[in-house]
Structure formats: structure tokens, C-alpha cells
Amino acid sequence: MPPRLPPRPSRRWPTLPFEQQHGVRIDKLLWFLRFARSRTLAQAMALQGHVRLNGKRIDKAHQAVAAGDILTLPLGRRVLVIEVLALPQRRGPAPEAQSYYRVLDETARSP
Image (cartoon, rainbow, N blue to C red; front, side, top):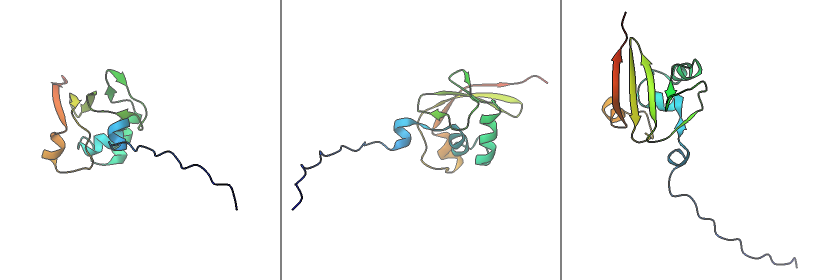
């Protein structure tokens, strides 16, 4: 008969989902919040360095964003500064997406 092993210590699993603990990818967040029509376009925005996270330029699509972060986004002829209030779990309708962020500043570029 093989030797008996001691019982494993119980592991305590985190109570929050992974996204709420570590943040969500910037491309996924831009798509969820409806700032990009597709996830591919959201990745392109991030990779080209058009997005700023807390004042720092982002050049990778997998950059993590958490609740409370400030995003600066160029959208057409305007620049939008938002604060992420909470992390969405899905890409829902526009009113639902707008409830996850707060507009801090919106400026139009001069022609």
C-alpha cells in the first residue's frame, strides 16, 4: 500500500472575475464601449498609438485598463477624454456602454 499523503490545503479562489482584478485589454474595452466598430479596428487604434492611458501613449493592444483609468481618444475631428467607471462584461447596447464611462473633456480640433 502506498504511503498516504497529507490532505491538500484548501485554496481560496478569488471572489472577483479576472477582468476586475487585472483589468481588461484596451482593444476589447474600446470595442465594448462602442468607440470602435470592430475589435480589429480597436486593435489598430491601440497599435498605432492613437490612444493615451493616464497620459501615456499606448502602442500595444493588450495593455490592461482598470476602473478609474483615464483614456484620451481621437474620434474623427474631436478628442475625447473619459474616465472608466467600471469594466463591462459584454458589448451591449449604446446606453449600457455609456454607463461604464464618464466624459471628462471633449474638444474639437480646428480645421
